[in-house]
Image 1 (spheres, rainbow, N blue to C red):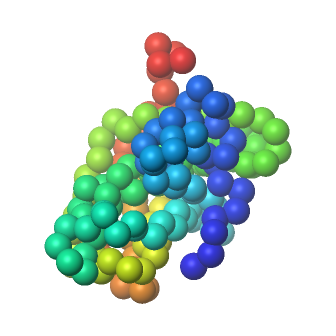
Image 2 (image 1 turned 120 degrees about the vertical axis):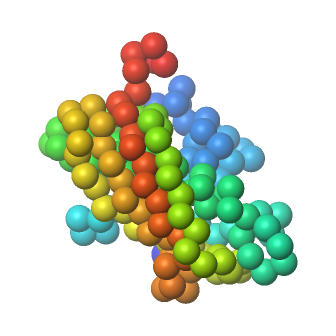
Length: 157
């Protein structure tokens, strides 16, 4: 699993790049990056040693954060594409916030391997998108989740 190229988070304005999960300017954050892989979205992250639940397994809250930021990034990618743009074309993408987050732990997630979140996008309203996500460790689906992401309200900007 390689580095995600043309990640949507690389295009966010500096004022909106401080998220603990996906903010490129948050020195202590996870620096999650989400891009296209065909018609699906992908985020790859290798948990740090301190992101442990019990020895050998990833902390569930970290996985929820991965699904959360993967979902909002995927929604941004989808609306950006719908508007005729792609990451890297110089147009600032729309920003999203989480309206709901659902995480289902299918099996324990092993530590020490990269995690790959793969998203399937569903537009449910012009300003709301649902992202269905599967998180894989060594090609085994360990977690599924769903994010409903809403376009960031003007009051946040």
